[in-house]
Image 1: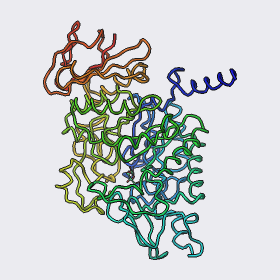
Image 2: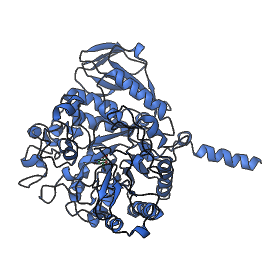
Image 3: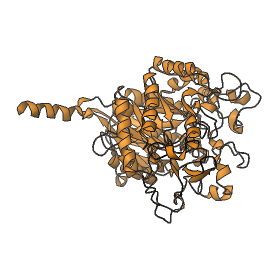
Image 4: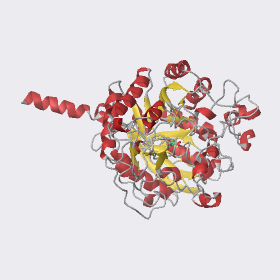
Length: 552
Ligand code: GLC
C-alpha cells in the first residue's frame, strides 16, 4: 500500500516539471518562421530554396533564435504555395531535393538549433494520387471507411472558410467532395483508418529523419460530423453566417491530437504547434484539459490583430496567463504568412515595433517571429487582380472594404522576398525577376543596414534574445503583471521570477515621456529600446514608446 502510494506520488511529481526544473524545451524556445519561397534564393531562379535557408542559418542563430519553422516545401502544384501537398515525402523541385531537406535538418542540429516542418494534415492537393483513386472508385467500392476524402450525393449547408459552398461537384465521380479551404484542397477522411495511419506514417517518416516537431495547418478542421449535419446559422459574417459546430472542433479532433502527440512522444520531446482557428478556450482544449497531453502549443489568432495599447496587452497577457498556466504555455505571434505584417499595423513606425518585440521576447510564452519582422519589413501594395495568391481569385471583395478591417486578401503583399541588403533584388536573388517583387523600401530596410546601425530593431532583438537566453527568469520564470493602478497611464509592467532571479519589464505604450518610480528594487538596465530611457536611483524615465528590462 505504502509502496503504491510512493509510486503514485512519484508519477504525479514527475509530471510537474517545474518542481524538478525540467520543463520541456518546446515551452521555452523561440521561433523564427521562414517562408522558404522568399527567404534566400541560392540558384538564381528567383525562388527561395532549401540550400538558401541553410546558407542563412548562421544569421538566424546570430539573432539568438533557437527554432526555425519552415512553411511547406513538399511536392505540390503550388496552387496555394505548398499548402496543397501532392507527396508528403518528396520536396518540390524548386526548393531542392530530399537530400537538401536532410542536410537542412543536420545543419540546424549542428548549430544546436531545432527545426519544425509544416504538416498539412487536413487536406491534400487535388493532384495527390489518392484523389485520382477516389474519383475513379466504383460505387460498390465506396463508403466513409473506404474513401480517402469526404464525399456525398447530397451536399448540406457547410461553408468553406474562404468562400461560399464547401462542397464541389466532381464530374468524374459524379459526387460532391468537401473542401474546408479552397476547392483544390479536398479534405481527407480520417474515418478511413488507412488515411489516418498513412498520415501518421508521414509524420513518423520525418521524425525518423530528425525533425523536432511540426506546425499543424488548420488542425481543428481535421474531422467533420460523421452524419454531415447542417451547421446552425449565425449572424457572424467572419464565419460565413454559420456556427461551424459540425465542421470544426469535433471531439474526434481532440482525440486525434492525443494520438499524434503519442506518436511524437515516442521519439522524445517533439513540438506540436497547432494552427487552431477560434477563441482561446478552443485552442487551450487542443493542448489538453488538465495535463498537456495533446498539442504542445497553439497559436492565438486574436493577437495577430493587436491594438497597440497598454490596456489591450494587459488584458491579453492576463487572459493568456489564466488560460495557459503551467504545465501549459502560451505562444506570442504578431505576424505570419497569412495576415498583415505587424509593422504595417504599426503604420511602419520602428519605435513602436521595438516596443512590441521587447514585450514579445520578455513575456512568459514562446515568441514566434515571421521572417523580415527582424528588420521591420512591411507589406507591399500589390494588385488583387494579378495576385499569385489564390485567395483574391475566390473572394471577390473590393480592397476598400477589406482595408476597413485592416486586412488584405492578397497574401503576396506580406510574402515578398527577404530584404538582405541594398543590392539588386535586396540581395535575395541574382535572377532578373523574382517570384514576387521586392518591396520598394529595400534600400533602407534591410539586414545589412540594420546590422551596421547601433540603434536598429535588429540590434534590440539580438540584445533582448541574448538576455532571454541567459536569464531563466525570462525564459522559464513565472510572470506577474503589475496592476495598472500602480503605474502611470499607458504603461504596462510585469515581473518575471525564477527562484531568486527577478527582472521587471516596464513598457510605455504612450507617445509622451513618462516618469515613474521603479516598481521594486531593481538597479540595472539590462535592455533599453531608446536613448531617451533613463534610470537614476529609484526614478525611471521612459521615452515615448520606450521600454526597459531591469534587473537587480
Ligand atoms: C493555413 C495556412 C494558409 C493556407 C491554409 C490552407 O491557414 O496558414 O497559408 O492557405 O491553411 O492550407
